[in-house]
Image (cartoon, rainbow, N blue to C red):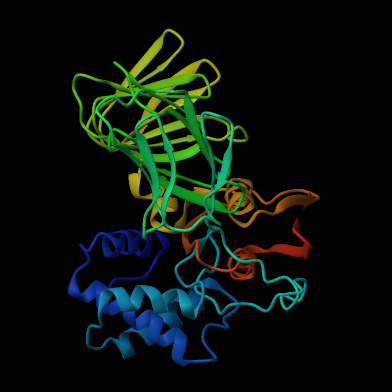
Length: 371
């Protein structure tokens, strides 16, 4: 069997997520889970060489029949943080006890579908509290919350005309999906907002703050434009993600399908699927990225690939609606792996504590210290 190292394991997990792992790789991963789940004494070695040898022996001994892939993925995370590969140290370990966390009193839940809709007349609708069905009508356009919780605009009259803009906003700990009048689907991440006209004109223009994933309805005659934090993205019909949070170092536009032009001032970049445009100040550049990581939030995951602690905790703060307070120097270790966004905050913190990061929860303040 191939020696297990961090890069090999990481690449194998990527193939597994895409459904491209071989039968042997799937059995190996499942045996990792079985070994972890069935043995209380697993991996207490003091050095990495001894640990890897223990794991290899256990894997060799426990390869068995394949199980359904979907079931494994769910149970894998129910067991513990096996998948998170942290720094360059020992990364297959039991979940530690965290004495600093008053877990029984601080069961902070993950975010969910929460948003507010502001109509053109200024009135606001709490989309979390309102029931399914028709929630508003404006100038021949009906606005409904469907059975799946999506906000859907439908042009009900051929004489419908724009009477101003609508804005959908998510709070910290919220996300929401809206279907615009032209059929474009937009999913907003936490602490984000999208402003759009009730009826589009010659150009389909919207304004974004925060982060959103777009599936733009194709219409060659009417370009779709997204303005966000000093840049404009122009498309005809495509799938892309924009991360434009004010507390991030750059605005990132990641393309999954089609073609996108990103303009910042007088500078323009055209990107193709698998590329990301980065706007930092007045500088605009592009690079190739792992698109699965960039849109992991949309698929219910936190995904890390060499991210530092502050980058991770900014995501945590938005999704769990907590304030991050650092005590002393901040760890510069890099983190790799995935954590479901449906996890309770305490479970996420347990995983991060595997790398000598320590947390204390005080109400909705998260105190962070490292050593």
